[in-house]
Image: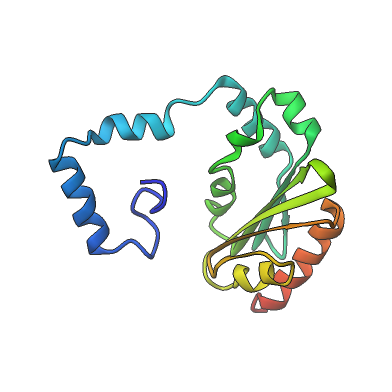
Length: 164
């Protein structure tokens, strides 16, 4: 369910639905699974979402969107890094957004980036420049660059791939 974005992603095939049908036939309960995945958050995750919404940035005529997670973000919300799953999808929900990313300050002076694309921007190619990986539509990286420097560089690399 999660890897296919609730069966929305392009890589979802007829085979995916066949496997899901076999799982249901074997006793998997779609309602229980959906509830476990999407309706079992702690209140702190909702407070983290508020922090994220307050920190969203747009560039290139709202074709690029991003936010930065800091230790202060977690402290204000009471959430933990495990509760960031799916937050980038809110950026992708904006009709004009072609590329989205989140940056997160990690211990040891590292910065993590998670990137998504609708297809115009090859985020795997961008992440590979920093030793990261993934695929064309979803990729990630970790670097010693601080979040501000990485943000600037990612915006430059994305802009090079966006059509005028």
